[in-house]
Length: 171
Image 1 (cartoon, rainbow, N blue to C red):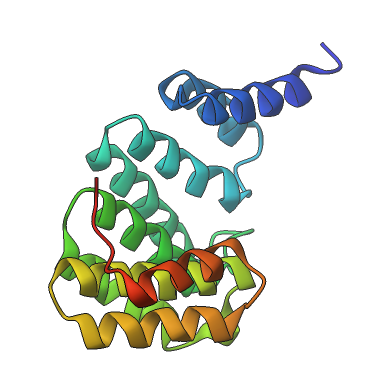
Image 2: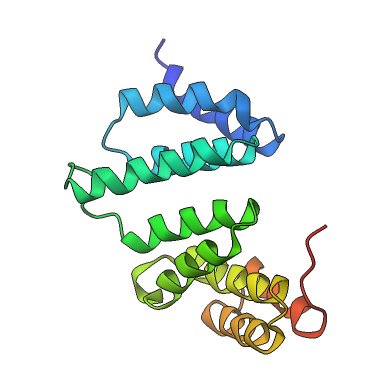
């Protein structure tokens, strides 16, 4: 009983690592019930749904985060909008809604100082990948260069370097 929350969090991490996100959904929902002010759990729920093949519920979970932020719900007021845009854009990217994903990534990259390094560099990487998928190579290269300059040591910046010479292609 004393370690239940710790165990749920650990299981979620394991399920995510082992590509079993669907099994993590009820655990994340329980954690949200216990900690309703924790926006990270709700963003994670969106990610879990998306990863498990349910992009609709993934986007709904992120829309709920946006609703709570708009309503100034305690705990959500410090969440930057850019983090919400990034999460929406990521889900849209993986479900091939490239135009909407690009809109959201542009919102993130227009205010990169308002997000953590990981989110910022990933937004530039995704922007480049979207441009490559839309056959807009010059804009893709520019986005990859921005990812590299934004956080040179980040894994996403290293990945961006590969796409400077070879366009991104989804497998």
